[in-house]
Length: 161
Image 1 (cartoon, rainbow, N blue to C red):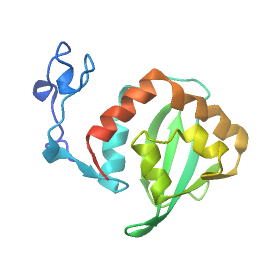
Image 2 (tube, helix red, strand yellow):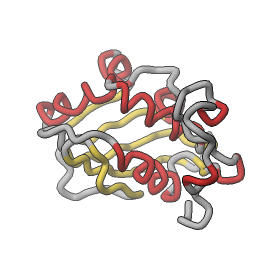
Image 3 (cartoon, rainbow, N blue to C red):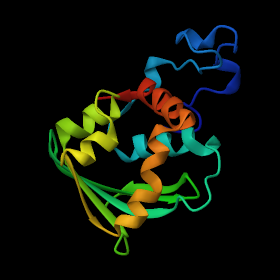
Image 4 (cartoon, rainbow, N blue to C red):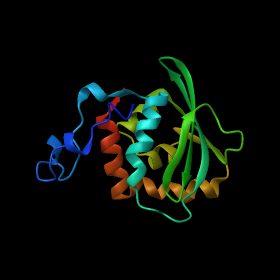
């Protein structure tokens, strides 16, 4: 999503109204600004929305995601987390990734929509991991943090699945 089409602070409803989401302080998003899941535009928007995440020292990893069986075939993308924040993301893969996660399109969508917990998907084998498991274990607890859960609510609000 371009800076021009991203809702500005003035276009968001007040903290008292919660932007129509029922959550105090939740931003309101115009449906016209929705981005398609797992596109570069979506990755850019998700990274921008997460810029305010609290710093989590040591929660850093370079990871590739492989999502199989999607409408457009296999999608590979990467995320670089530094101290709990996604600082870089894009389509394609990192040659020096520390972890590679592989999942199906259906499971990826379920996780993104909040219908499947990422930790549970990993434990059930629905998300396969390869690489530096200690690095993966350092970031998995973030998925239970209230700030992370709120961020993913905001991302869902601007995502077309």
